Image (cartoon, rainbow, N blue to C red):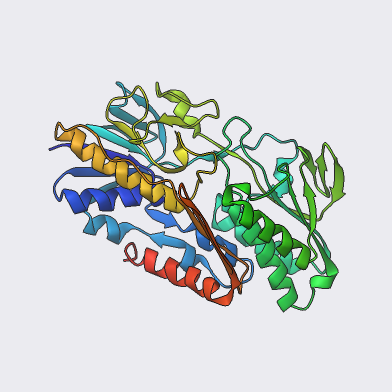
Length: 376
């Protein structure tokens, strides 16, 4: 029986499982991740205001693994050996005939004083910390921003920071205390959200102006302190910093022979195969893929890549040539706790729908619909 190992229980890893089982009921699948759970990152934005809580964010996967006949190894990967046919973990070594790496990325935390900033997409504990800090504040300055990996422009996740920004503004208004807070949005980019398209940039900037959010754009970030953000263009005071750094590859990649991009991710071809490696595929944030400069790092893109990777694994194990590629598509709803702005972008063009209440509800319904397949 052919042995497939998947590293990571995020969006890409779970989509790979579903794709395998739709096409092959018997292949042996082992998934390795620290915990048998999915953290639904898109709903983290609603934790500070109380719209979402742990039960909406952290989804146990034991039942899903049983239904899919998947063996789960609760451990951390530390490296690969034998040309990636052996996966080394903290608890043992596991052999495979094909490997899909879907372990996500890690945030670049090299800025001096980065410990003073909260990185929301690190998980539930991070956004709960934001919630608790805001509840304790009677007034003050809040800075929200993001940056990219200077050696890998696609390795960034800026969209959620717009959502935390607008969501926090909405929350404070609903609580009747927005006038006691100054909100500042900062990023080294002169046109924040450019990857979303020209129309989106204009709409996002107009939304900030309408909400009286200060903007500090186009200045490289030098450091953080407990009460300030320091950039090459100056500094400004803050009592709370929410910051999304750029992303790079996992530390365990250093203990492999896999080819890396300049930004530290795994170099992949259009079939999601890691370049120069045999029967090793990558999907999601772990990979560096060729494509348009706006190609996003988001769950939807990870799903598309994982589907292609899984189909190619099965073809390769059946002595067929790989042929499955993935569509490059950006699709998101920039939510503000009570409204949402729909944005999509493909090689054919862009589509943007203005802020409306329907999109807020659509994002919530989609989350429920997407997660139903994983709930016990």
